[in-house]
Image (cartoon, rainbow, N blue to C red; front, side):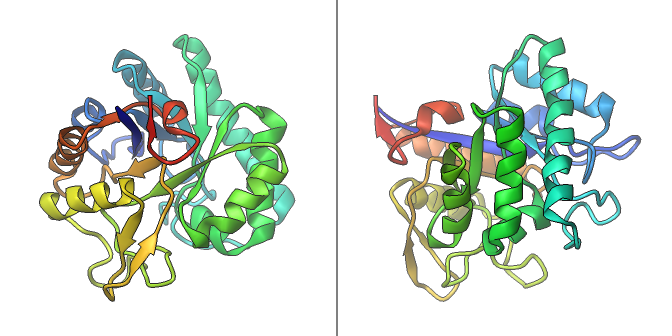
Length: 264
């Protein structure tokens, strides 16, 4: 049986504001990336989401971002490497605390939004993120963009001794260079469940089709679907159904390592 992780960004509600379909999506995924209070989330939401992940037997990851609640972490910020490193330590520690309360183990770290995209392009930022993770817990997996555009994140993580997990996004459009199309452009987010599920299967089989029709090779170990997408429940349910119908078992991140999808 082949294995693939299916992850989702979660815990992004804040105070009286609810975002995402966490309760409904949780039963279809194998890993949850939980917001840490900087771009979204608050202590009550973090506690609730960690507890829900534990009850659903879903792997738990930290989803740290820039300190940008107003912009949902999607705006670039001129932060020093030292600031970024300590932002990571602060946010990861917060989620680890809630994991401790609920008897769970934190498994991975996936940067959010602009911080993630900046790390793809900027070696110094990627290194600062990796240093933050490594200084706190070297056993945590570092989630990086799959493909050539994620090479900087992968290299910075591995040079520091982290296990790097390669991630692809079936509900996002790709450029011919292998990076995500900006959300500001039409067609950047894909909402058709059938199309998204087929893209997920393609990615599991080692490639993605870019907006211009180019097929880009990818080594993928985890697939992300966004919980704030309209129809997120339908998307993630269809992805899981399609993967399993093609003999790909959905398991948490640590079990989908080594060579993308693997035989167990």
